[in-house]
Image (cartoon, rainbow, N blue to C red):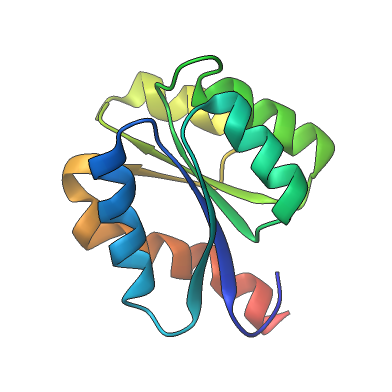
Length: 129
């Protein structure tokens, strides 16, 4: 993760949700949407191609779910930061996401409030290092 612009991959199969997340990210001058993905396989391919600083993954996506994608990306890119963005506000999903190697978990109903602070929390240790 560089000290300048934070490059983010947004992966969600719902176009409306993906657009909303991108708008939230683009409201920040130091965050760039590096690319978007529409399913799990697309997310893996785009992460390999674009090497984003952070990957935002929906838990429930077609072809490959977010947990599977997180495991693959953490195995291939151990330092890549992953945030799960999910409609599921349950400890079970949060624990499963943490076990898959994610750095953060944001519930979609709170995305407008919680997403940027979650990214800043993940980004901060890297900036001060």
